[in-house]
Image (cartoon, rainbow, N blue to C red):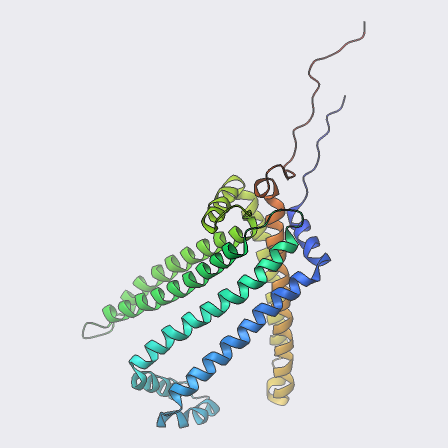
Length: 315
C-alpha cells in the first residue's frame, strides 16, 4: 500500500485569505491607526504652537523655511530649543506619554474586535488582559524612546566634554546604543503583540505573554520565515510607492499642488496596503500556531506517512 502524506496548510496563504474575506479587519485597523495619527499630529501641533508662539525668533521660521537655507533653519531651531530649555523637556515627556496612552486605548479597543474576528470559534483573551498588553506596549515604547534620548544626550556630553568634540567617540557609543535599545524594544513588542492574539480566556496578560514565547520557541523557523515573507511584501510595496513619487518628482516644480496630492494619495495607498499585510501576518501567525493556541485544535504540521503495522502475504 502506498504511503500517503498530507500537505500542511500554507499559513501565509491562509493569513492573506482570512483577511481578504473579512474586509472589516483591515477597515478597523486603518480606522484606529489613522485616527491615532491624526490625534497625535493635532496634539503635537497644539503643544508646539503653545511653546513656540511666544518666542520672537519663531516669527523668522516661515521665512527661513521658504528660503530653504538649511543652516539658517538649523540656527533658528537651535535657538528655540535653547530658549525653551526645561519647558521643552517637560512638554516632550508629557506629550509623548499622552500619545502613548491614546495609542494604547485605541489599539486595545480595535485589537479586541479584530482578534475576535480572526479567532472564530476559539476562546479569546479577556478584554482587560488585551488592554493591559496594549498599555504595556505603549509604556514600553515610551520608556525605550525616553531612555534612548537620555542615552544619546549623555553620550553627546561625553563626546563634547574635552576641548574639541570627538565625533568618532560619539558614533562608537551611539550606534551600539541605538541598535541594542531598538532591537530590545522590537523583540518585546513583537511578543506582546502575539500574546494578544494567542492568549486564551482563562489566562492573564502575563500568562498570554509566556504562551506566546513558548509557541514561537516550538516553531521558531516557521515564524521567522513567515515574518520574512511579509517583510518582503511590505518592502516591495514601499519600493513601488517610492518609485512612483520619484518618477513624478518633476511635477514639484511645474505643478506643486498636483504633486503634493499625488504623494498623499500614494502614501495613503501604501499605508492601507501595509495595514492589510500587517493583519495578514497576524492571521498567518495564528494559523501557524493553532494547535498551541487552542488545545485539541488542528495541527498545522505535516503528518507522518502511514505505514502498515506488519507485512501480510497471501499464501
